[in-house]
Length: 446
Ligand code: ADP
Ligand code: ADP
Ligand code: MG
Image (cartoon, rainbow, N blue to C red; front, side):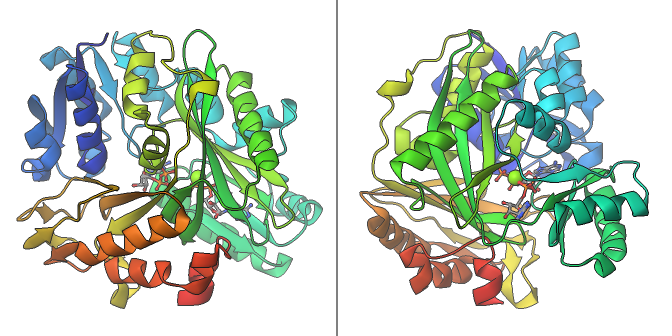
């Protein structure tokens, strides 16, 4: 078993990983930027080491400093969390070369499956339905217009290296294509330092359904069911749940099988998520794979009782999966809501500041994953997510009632948050009925 894990991340996911390590009796090393000296992850780890200035490219993306921190502290492994270096194949390769176990897939899998264009090619060969479209890298405007026409409008332009819903734009007609290309390229360059773009057919009124996978080094692959992440704002998930009410047993089986096939086709090892869009006729299409732990992984943990982060660590330690597919039980209904420090009055602009007062909800069926405490100052440099509230009910109605109760108990003073918005959202009649698609929030609330 791994002895000492360095967590190359911050905030709630760093805390989440530290907790799993503690329960496995593994030592932890936190890395922090100058401004994160008093962050929860820095305080909770056995050891903490400063890796640079606040700007992410000087600290949490500073590969050399992170590897050096692992060497200095004698860490034998690195958990990348999500965001930052989690889908950076070069970093995973560098870890391997330095004899540090990267807790995630092999770098070759990240290269292949973490790349939105390459993974779609591989999926096509494996006979998994993919969203039609094409790679626009090094294509002229004329060629791009042809690909778009062949695909059929409306289309979606997407950053090949994108994530977090950034660098995505719908184009309804050819006249708008040129301008949209310029905008998306600029956004992609800014957010991901890479302006490779591809295009996809725009799927009308889709639901976002993803499947959680675990795969060990011995060729065992299991799925832990789906998560429905259809409730999004600007292509970024806000609320995630399982089971999805749009899947019947037949479709669930088909999607899970496709996800397992995807993972086997790429010889993928460790935890991963295969994302699909499901159209209104219940056709499903592979969209992308996230080759890392995801924000919404607790939904599945609560539903199945399986600790996905511990499984990641065990798999990286060379152990066999602890679970067989037919032994996995899915109990009740789980919903997660992302609580963000953002100002609804200013178009949900991220709003850092000091948390002057805090009351976290509790009680039966409530789990909170967060990296905050009363008196903590949220720095302006990173993501605005403060906490995830995960509720477990016997059925969807009970889960919604619990989430409402939890959001009403939650008090965050000192910074604006989306709590009131989340409450309005879950009290909406169409939400309660399960009657929505990915544009629900934009259509109903803006
Ligand atoms: P999930 O797929 O787990 O729901 P999100 O898309 O919400 O994850 O992203 C989780 C975090 O990681 C966010 O802070 C997001 O901005 C960041 N992130 C995701 N993908 C990338 C990427 N390719 N580059 C940089 N940051 C990313
Ligand atoms: P990210 O890497 O940012 O997570 P994804 O490719 O997973 O990007 O897409 C994020 C979201 O954008 C999806 O969940 C969906 O709501 C929307 N989306 C992406 N591609 C399409 C498409 N072809 N048609 C309709 N919606 C899409
Ligand atoms: Mg995605």
